[in-house]
Length: 326
Ligand code: AQP
View 1 (cartoon, rainbow, N blue to C red):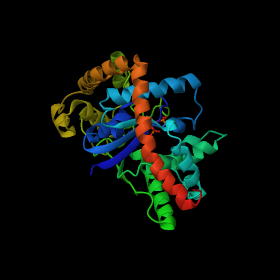
View 2 (cartoon, rainbow, N blue to C red):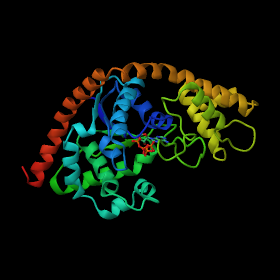
View 3 (cartoon, rainbow, N blue to C red):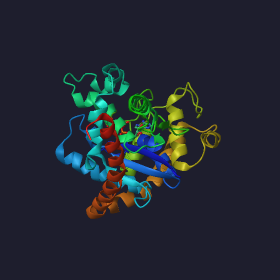
View 4 (cartoon, rainbow, N blue to C red):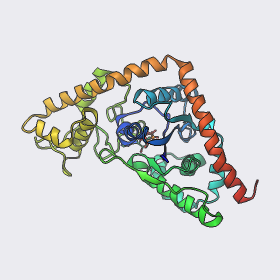
């Protein structure tokens, strides 16, 4: 039997290289050997204020990008969280198996709540909805970037707590990070993670960025002091650029270090920018075809909804029976 995996991305803006290298690259690699579920987590997006039209557009653009980077909708189940109501139903039930202190310790909550005087309950309970997203599908593994590790650990704790009380109900999934690039850093500040909403426009490269924008962002990217191009603990900016270069070129970091031995930052950055542009070209071409074909995107999401709903409902019915409401 194939192992099952599940993961998702919020439709909060353009996908960036951090999302791709930390999460989607693994998804594309795993799609043939696993029973894979990939979700557009639109209910997570509304934990911060969203413009109605922008959210709607972002959902479709994310669906198009999922396919453009190489996910095959005939092999994987690609769906929208809000299309499967079992997610919010199970989240409500799991709220009652989650402690306030556990949610207060979540670093992503602390970061997003910082400087935001009026925090919503949704932002606070986001990790419980994420636990429901995962546990409904009984996955063996959850391939995500390193920033999501704490949320998957909480998911495991909630699952174990429920199983201990009501007998084996949920599979307790393992978190899965890529070997390299589990945490891609911002181009303008190598101490913070690359993020759609957290960093300035110079901090991330969107998969939809035009070639001149990519070149400009790489040119402006901060580097470390010294002149050698190598990946090491005291060169966080160069390490980050080398990991990105490796992901888009297929060369290992070691091969790149050798290639640029004795070379200057200018040449390195120019060729890195060109490598990203070349890698992005077919992805953007496919994306532009898809984004104009709204009916095809709708059909993909509808098919995903049908497949996901069947699996999710089995788990939800079991949970409802165990707690005594069915
Ligand atoms: N910088 C990163 N390096 C490696 N992996 C990353 N991921 C996100 N940023 C990096 C991984 O991408 C997947 C989807 O993330 P998400 O967009 O749903 O949420 P996020 O982690 O909050 O990403 P952003 O860009 O920071 O979004 P905003 O700004 O909207 O909050 C996850 O697997 C994540 O680990």
